[in-house]
Length: 279
Length: 171
Image (cartoon, rainbow over all chains, first blue to last red; front, side, top):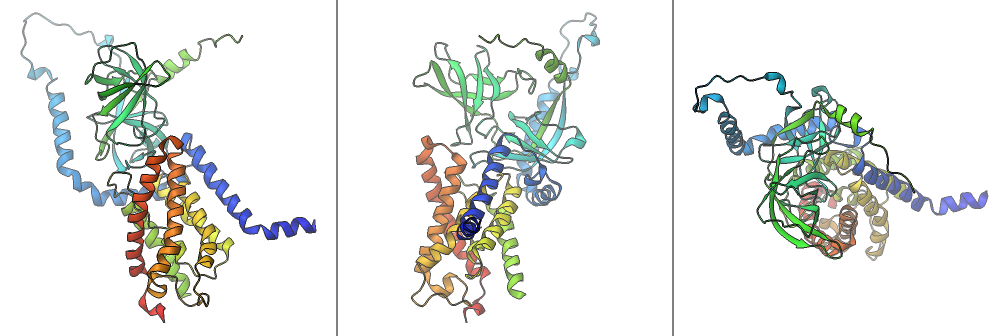
């Protein structure tokens, strides 16, 4: 016993260091996948307020750019209004409303904190559980997708953006329909990687990459970016496809959170798929 | 008491500057400004190492919780605090440190500051980026990030310590 105490006294500093280091590292590696508490994120009440105060000060810097983005979106929507179309045929048109059932709802939000130079970049939004935001919902802006909600507290939420290593969003190439997962290699905030397209398929450069809508997180067909380069992966029959993001993540401010009203139904159905037989 | 308040003040000034300003300044090429370890460096020499580690842990968590890095800064600053006494001893002046003198550039000279603080900061940055990227494939990128960030953080720290360390403490 005396030896043990002597040992502890001798290596006291190293033990304290190792203990604290273990706490820090375990938080780092678990929170990256699944945050358990809000207190270590900017989604907590006090930290959120600090970020709101900072954003109040800096949000006007991009006012001009933001107005243009909103105007562009307004024009896009206005073009779809019946008033802006000429009727080509004078027959009676009957619209059966019950044919359409709303599946996606959109919650407007503002990015109050963001980064783009770290290995994994998280954005903070000013909406939370009070507005109906939950973990796993998709986030997009007028130009393209932003990411997936990672953690939400009462009034704030943290988004795992398209600039994180394992964002793994289900995407496909428009037209040909080849699909894969979106990844980010940490080097350039304008470019992501699409993983999983077989190299016997013909991938055209500058074809559009859109969401596939498989996981029920994003609706089908939201813009992600364009194919800007492709090269074969060594040792695997796959293309390494470089995607030039359509959204500039360095200056994103106005976003929408997607609420999928049928997600529970889809998940309940998919839970019934029988597991693969074990050999 | 005034000494205590002075260090609390530095904690807040350096911590908030890091979180609110330097974290937002994103220039590219992997350059990140991280002068925040200066607070740990400016703590009195006679501080016990265990206390030093505990203070560093709290300081790191403060910065982590405001920059969504979940313990990355904490881990790096703990390494900084753990190595600080050893490196200070290694480069101590011939007659040892005077307890009243603050370990700053102004009182002990540039070459001493570069050797101690520079070395500690380099280890801190290297640890930080190795953990952040966590892939040996990207070693070159890690080193590029470390090198560029180290130079800019060091220059920033030097300017900041002129602001934070009052001349009167030189006597």
